[in-house]
Image (cartoon, rainbow over all chains, first blue to last red; front, side):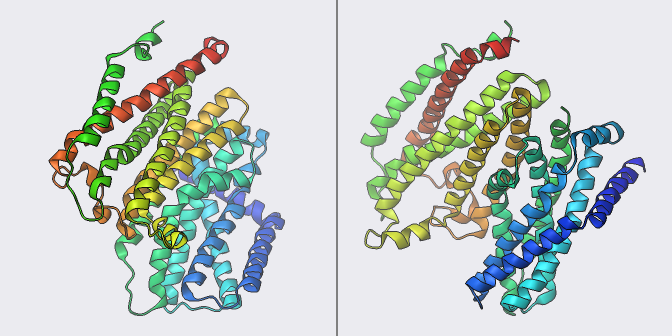
Length: 218
Length: 239
């Protein structure tokens, strides 16, 4: 059970850091709040399709900001230390796990704020919450791996956006399609699309585990 | 010089074949009879140019990914150069695909009276979105490459992105046409060009040689670019 313990230890380390240095957590919260306020100023009560589109684009930007620092915060010396004690797969899996959790919390909070400011046209509320969790998980996986690439290139969040946007478009289209069903009782949510999204997420995890070792060694 | 055998591209029979096939494409493609479909009429001849550009682009991108995988396995910088050059020529083929598509579209789908409306309708085409994603990925690949100074690190990081992005691109090209409405033929069930039954035999007689001809030409251009790059980076490659 050594790999699981290592992943858990690294995950706890990230969690403790987040709890002790709360400025970054509150920073993202403030980012969510002010973005939603700007949207509220721009459009007060959007119709369903616009509401849906704005919500998912907001998730995309939150994800870039929440995940970007995950690899940049590790200094060179600390990376070398991790390199000597854990395998790259364990390291990247712990990061994926932590960022997934972070993004799940952030997306739920943003859904709450979004509903407060821009009203909530969603009829099937629980399926939508499930969809938001699934969507934010997908986003966090893709952008965690891209954050690793961006950190290697010593670049900021801007390069993450240009690397990630074309890759994430298909998943966003699927998510927006799915969430159209929650605005009315008549449309059923296509189950096979949900499985497709989960399959894509599993594929991203595999790719991250296979490719991350090449990024790590210097 | 063992690499001479692998990278032997100075003179080859396939370059002659490429020229022959393209001469055939241009003469037979313009002179031979084509089936006349309503709305398409003679514009169907663009099939020999427009669709072949996309085939060439995808084949070059696949070769680029193969070289990226080879680089990660061997750490040979020559593979990195190949990967980059195949990607950049692939982008050029993609832009040509857009250009030929835009000409074709203006005679078939577009309504000349309301150009802005038809553009926003046509730009939502799943195949256009797929092509846009592919081009954006490889533009980002080039930007990522240029942002890293260290040669080995640049090669490694960009190879990793190349593989990751391509692995994500393939399912999206497969998914998008199935969830979005399309004007393209065979929109909801994959690729009509590869379906042997639906295409007219008169079209196929020119279409398949045309794909081979254009792809070989694109590969030829790339090999010249790769050789130029080898000469420029001689000091690094021999070190």
